[in-house]
Image (tube, rainbow, N blue to C red; front, side):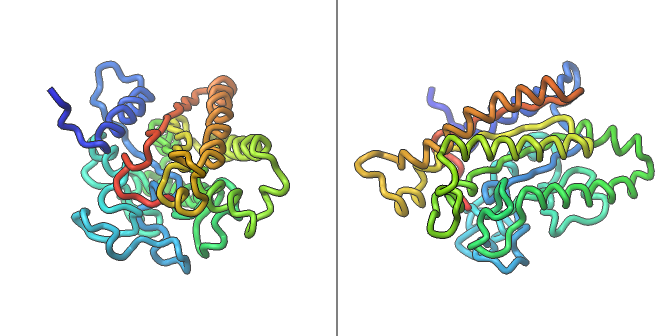
Length: 292
């Protein structure tokens, strides 16, 4: 019998199982108290809407298959994280930081921003965006608000330690930085190997910053083969191949450094659980979604 699951579901279900494994709950419901999302356009749900930026998606045809219409999601429908939070048992999607208010922040917040990267300068030619460093600062603002709501430091610490922190970022550090040498100097200063090492080292420090702020359970995504996206193919050409080899090489080098880095963090940080998630090799599986 052929599977009736849609492509997006085939991706989300294994990811969900990996996320639930973070909990190590043998006899509890497959549910977490809160879910925080960091990343770029793959995860953005509206944080760029009010920015002066060309990286926006709050207009048609974005959202044509989404019940709420165009919301700032860079896709025709729901993002992968929208599927995950529903499967985890949350009644609603995680609100973007730009719209977070009241007690809804206790369930989680989405900080992701289209065109954002690990490096602060990444995507600057697109205008306004929220780099990962700034997303972390926004999260610390939310922590202060959670502490005010709970009026108890130990309860706040306990809550944060049981949340899942989803981090899916790095695509733009290549397609909106390294592979735009006419706008950025990174390709002139670093080989692909050196640049991947530099990115992963910076990401390690950023993850430690979240750990220091109370995070313990991390779902960290590797980079997909974005050299196979229509954008990469149209801009760089494939020279007879199916995908853009030099672009996919960047993703491979990054992922090969990311996995041992996460293992090292698991070893060195008390109580931390970093899980590496390998995205689909076919970006089309994530719906009609643009990578920014």
